[in-house]
Length: 117
Length: 115
Image (cartoon, rainbow over all chains, first blue to last red; front, side):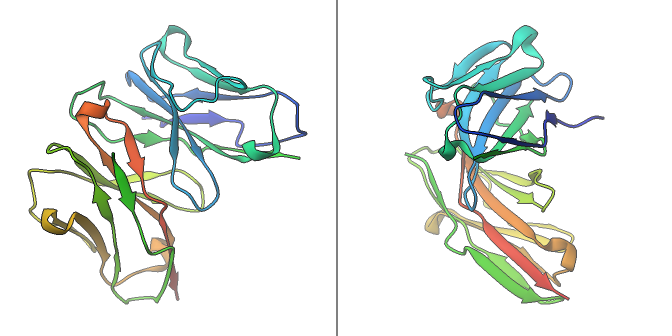
């Protein structure tokens, strides 16, 4: 079974440029997460989807970040414009569990490492 | 508020030594779940174990064992006879249904096993 697939693995851009990350979750997983991981830190939630609905986006900096999950499968995370402080790893994860159900394990992709110059 | 503390930032051990990674959590929920994930250099976090708050039975899986103690709000992870392949960053995480199962991760412990 294919795992969570993310692209690109690495991206280097100049500040003020836009960037987009793509995630394909495990087939059948209704819940999709985008996490931000800074160096030496644990993942921090940016947004969580159940199917195509963003059920928790309270941590997403909406002035420059946006996300979508069309048709409840693939998802994209966009930053426009990027700032120096956005340099980090952006992790996508998916899970079978939804909402207040018993929390299943999260399956993570390998992440997209962003460097903003 | 939910919080996970991993006080050990980095640990180095010589191969075949035992090592324990500490995890202390804070929550007001009576129902919650604790997790351990491994993040090798490739970057992908790999699930190791999930425990619920009502099951304090310790668990052993091969060279891995977990000690869950509600009295001290700890969920420690021990690797017996460590191997070079165990070198990775290990994260402890907490999740509770009433918060929509948001996962709260600790800052991780970087383990280096020296051959």
